[in-house]
Image (cartoon, rainbow, N blue to C red; front, side, top):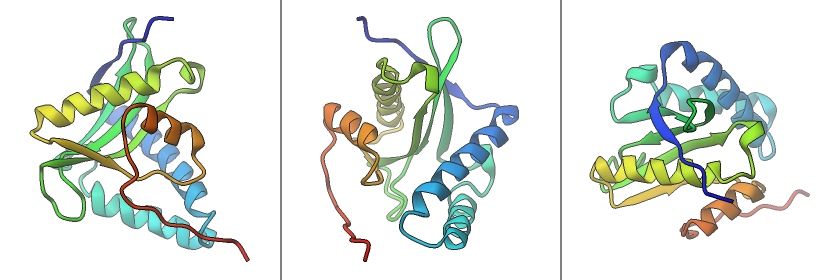
Length: 159
């Protein structure tokens, strides 16, 4: 099978609300595995306010739509052009990557990730960081296959 090709374009305002609503819901569901649901909703709200205070117009943040060669939307990516804690620009930060359901397990995740890496390099970064929830096996497999390494790890046990 040939590897798919994607093109990234800036997300339009009419796409933004649908994307962020879905992303926030998925984020809350993942957070709720480690904290009460209300705390997870509040953290998601605070994180969006912190990292996207001006939505699509937030400086140094790119929310991108991935399209295949026929112009079909196959996924999304949100990349910050600086490390979120230190604000240094040698490290870009991948906040989110997603592939639409019909396109999963077909190489689109890898193609979107490669395109995001190119965006980060063009912005002057020589490293792309990200966080991944420990139970997100498909994402962890993708990142490992693409050369990403664990740099920190948290663990917990439900009692």
